[in-house]
Image (cartoon, helix red, strand yellow):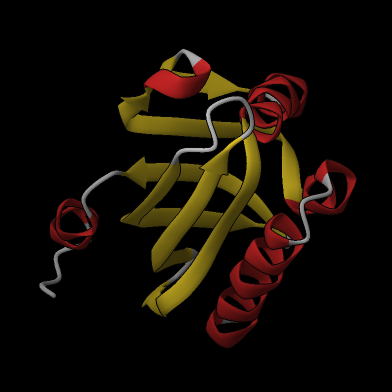
Length: 136
């Protein structure tokens, strides 16, 4: 099951990079928990949101804020059981400002029944790796 979880996470980020919200939502469990560990000020999100409709609204705001927004995998690794860690390279361009952003993120993901059940997003991938008991 672990390699299947890694492939599911890669496919979810591929759908994200296509920029169509409707392509991302099939990967999301109805009762998903999404935690922005350090918050996302550009969409006014801090803390944890629950449920696929709330996550849909959050992602709509994110996609509206950015003209382009990509998360390219540097590392996607099975942690055993139902957990996967992903270190991603973010690149984005603001819709209104045209400002460009480049950074790295870490995601701890929990998979249940072939869907993303919990997403923990870390602005610093080192913190995600530490939370998973790993180092870079």
